[in-house]
Image (cartoon, rainbow, N blue to C red; front, side, top):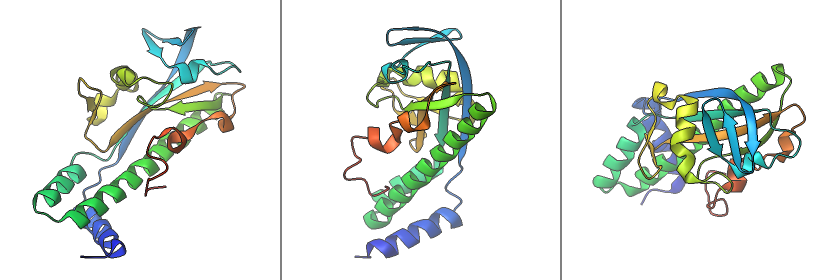
Length: 197
């Protein structure tokens, strides 16, 4: 049985050699027209996002963002499991998750820079399925972020395809502070046992 470090090294080599990761992200910043309890009106859509609606310092805009590594890496992971190469499959899955989170951080940093140029601070950040943003909002978040342009879709149950994808919302306002954001890791129910932290 290969060691964890060896499997991780092989996973990194596999991703690079086979060009499995095809990172892409997209986002849109939408002006908030009204906040009614947990409901946030943006453009022609209404978000049910209590985590963002609760911003007491003034929610003025919401960024809807999506990120993906593309389908190839998940297909390779599935193929490895099918051929009983579980150690490499698990290592590849872990590395892919780390890459996806780094891509999300890059998208978040881009949103922060654009918000700063517009005189806006950054508040809460949450994904559909996190506390304060019901999973049922997944399709709406994808539509607001124009996720189809980079090949991201959701199933009826709210799961994303490609699987190595994620979506999130960011609260924006002139008086919001970045330290009010709970962050992806703090909201995640797997945070205590996650190897990607």
